[in-house]
Image 1 (cartoon, helix red, strand yellow):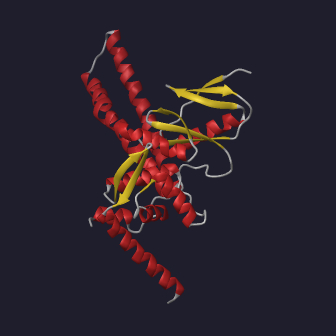
Image 2 (cartoon, chains in turn purple, blue; image 1 turned 90 degrees about the horizontal axis):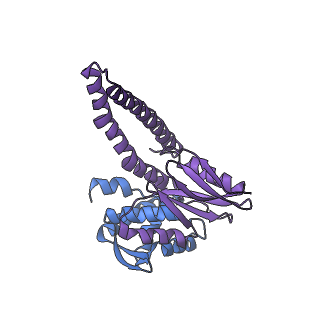
Length: 183
Length: 103
């Protein structure tokens, strides 16, 4: 049988769903090779395998990179790749130590890192660029030529995409906070 | 000790406590994990994401300081501020223990 490619999209707070997806694929005999934008997952055909995949988010300075990866290596995790500053690791399931976090405090800290580094810029773009632009166009009045109308529609679509994105991410982060029970 | 340090580190997580306790001697992350496993008869395993995150956070907050990097492994040691925090935690845990024993 052949290798496989699948298109999947996981929102910022959905890294646990993504891990589960990769583990399930391995159980079906498709080992995760790499993921490329906009969300194409490449798999290699093999025997059904109990492979565990974990995703960490801990962007560091370039000079700290090697010691970061070495730490995971010492613990038996194989590094696969980075995408959007998320780091992908895998390990054969040997029945022990299948987590990269051992308490909820550190799970929450990772989530807050994602929130701060990825979510806040998203909201900033929405509030400082998209909203003012749409407002200006609405106030600006009559558009008759096709180019202007095209731009008009593009910005409106963009605005709705951001609304969906931000709503879904906020809900996801709240769900995680509840799950890990932040005080 | 400023309010931020108190808020974050008093009381500490079990993981945080053991890491800081071990760093009274210079050590790198993976070895801390092994030592903690040994000290707790295998009950407490510190995972790499937690270990790396805690060490970076403690270094940023000046509880520990970076000593050297050897074979891509970074060693740390406790600072004066770290010792203060550890002292507060030890007293708290001792009191907890005394009270629970009813002594």
